[in-house]
Length: 394
Image 1 (cartoon, rainbow, N blue to C red):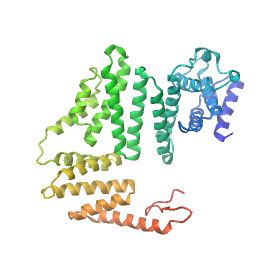
Image 2 (tube, rainbow, N blue to C red):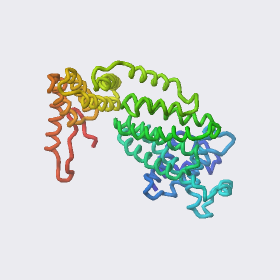
Image 3 (cartoon, one colour):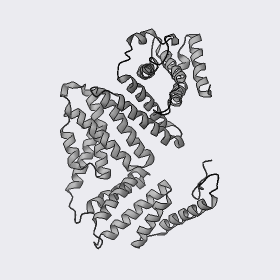
Image 4 (cartoon, helix red, strand yellow):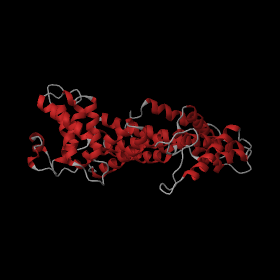
């Protein structure tokens, strides 16, 4: 028995012996139980540790008992999500609550979707609040379980489809923020468009208005933000998607962002790459000032598009090259990326804009690469020392 599972079991025994759910309602009890769930279900393709899932089920079952349950929504969510996975897999003598067993429908196709969604949310919680070094792996697990849940939900379950699709959308937005990966935003856009397509295909009375709003708001926000940051989907497509949805689904803050986008598109441009230069430069400045590598990465894409659209002999080309070089330098510093630093330095040098700060950055990464090559060992092929001024994680 792992130390984590030992703590969960110990609290359960105490609560059962005293007939008092208080030990299970402590925040640490919740954190340990959800950590045990993550440990029991690391990935959809891996075997699930049923014994650990049983302990998680009983933790939240006993948390829910008593005269009052201040966290009933969370408790019931975990109870249902774990129960539908356990019930068809455990023998009758396992002693699951009869009130749940009597109502269980083994033929319900949403059972596995409920469990996968629960586990995805548990991993997503670790990605948002856990140790920094473990967040990428936790987020990858959350995304994998989210995909598993989406595959299991029946197509006619519109509410389930919307909830799971919005969850997937938000995971990829989080991936963009965590890894500064603009491609994650493009994946989020696909989910946002799927939400809009489902909502526009349904009759207005088919769903609760609150559910429609809860699904439409993040979808439209993602579409508008990605249009601003990456230029895709085009503004015209975003406006068409909004017009196809029920009235009132566009929140004021998203409407404000949409208005700013419309204003940007009314400004005159003198050459094909000017629009991307204008937008990319603003995004880069904001990303640098707010220490947001994700926005800087998006700015790099906008500025690359500007460079590709600006003729080689156009008088504004040095301005585009300088803007792209500076954005790349900022991204290199944020990612500790020697190749990006080298590209930034070459671009800036080509237009006479390489200053001492950028030279120092390039020199630091050259030294790091040399040190990495010198310190690589046969036992750890390709092992690299950290950049100057940073300690090794080990």
